[in-house]
Image (cartoon, rainbow, N blue to C red; front, side, top):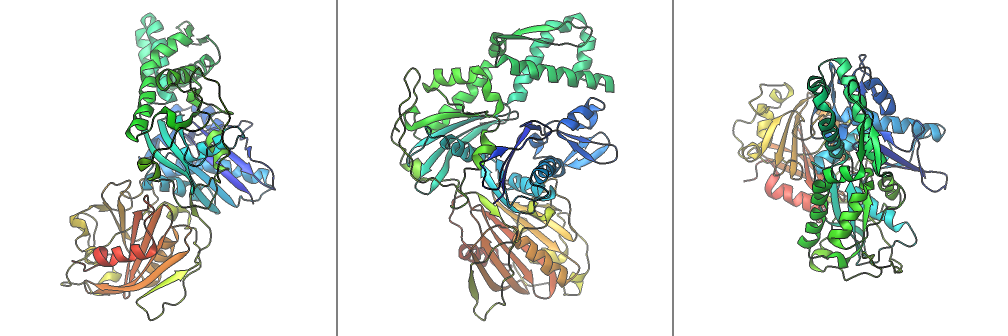
Length: 604
């Protein structure tokens, strides 16, 4: 079993591989354990990544994006005169990892790829990541692992760092782009994220900016106009100078984690600037204190105190700042733990996450907070032994490569099909999220012949045929032409498409209506949409009718979401329903009941 874990971070990407029975090891790309997540759009349209991208950026910084993950909510990136999707940018980074992994495996592909993501990421963001992985060439099983779960798994992989059932671990994750904190508990069924929160405006990049501004205050008075050109470059030469300066500032920040002082090289006409650790800590102390206070707030809001924690685990490269551990000790009276390199902890931990299980969230600890665990490392107290843990399992989402098509539908209205696998959707389809359908009335039903033609679209992108299928859904949801409401940056597929969101666009029910040019194309699209769901053992299949239309629907569920896809017997129309499964209450029968009761076209 060849398993690859990838932590696509804001600034750096880390990959870990285990194969041929050997223990997990970091995949070195271009000779380093961390690969910059940067991308550079070449004039010929090629996307260059990693250190090669950073080198090319010195020639033309306008074509460079150092942190594509930070722009995950945007549809496209303008790099020079090239427009690329965020999905393609992330796919290019993952493709470089895929290339190096295949080289080290002698041309073979991994059997499974585990992708870590922030716990706060909703359905849309997670599926940008899945889509990027497919576009990168990973056509094997894809497993999504929440970063705090992976961090907890890494923590417990050390013999003297265990979590018994009922214990909880706080994960303090200070990366380049964001700060995230989470409380992860060990239950009888596995690890679970009990609570999480974060700060989108705090990360290593913000520390770099604070240090840059500090340096500017020391030198800008010598040539204010030149300094402004560095901050707001207008020429290629200015952009090169700014890029070099930012790299030197970042290197100085990292050096101050190891040394009490260092120098920042400055471009002419400015002199080099000596900075000390004390100066840096004074600059960022208010921001770091916000992060520690947020962690304390998450604990309080869930009825937990430091005495309920088995420890606080530091991950993310920016957690190396000595000030972080100092503030945590001062505010929470716990000495935080760092094991190995904090940059690689999440990717390594994903390898210790078991594939079986059901959920990343639980309510158990909210109503029954854990008792004080054995061996809490309080500030000023020696660490004692830890109890051996019960079996710990976690519950990622899996999107495997094969999904056999269901057998012919029997005469019964609904048939529960047991033991079906799942087909990985084609590269671009892994990014697609979902559809809810509700229609009312049967008047003015377009004919089957009319639905074979594209038709005129209204302001929301509906043709008469799609409007007949949607019914009153457009009246109580947000709808727009194309895929963008569901999946920003997705490459458009053929057909007339309208996407809608009911509730929170990242977490609520997502909707896609599609009109194609033939029944055969509609059936193929329906099969592929259903296959997006991932591993499932059950499937429900039944007939539906309403609004002068009739057809068949199929429903499946996984530990992350439920999917229901339905077609029309005599029209090339396809609908897909995706509902988040955060509470782990969805199953195919419930998806079918919800569809028939409230979503099915013609439902009042």
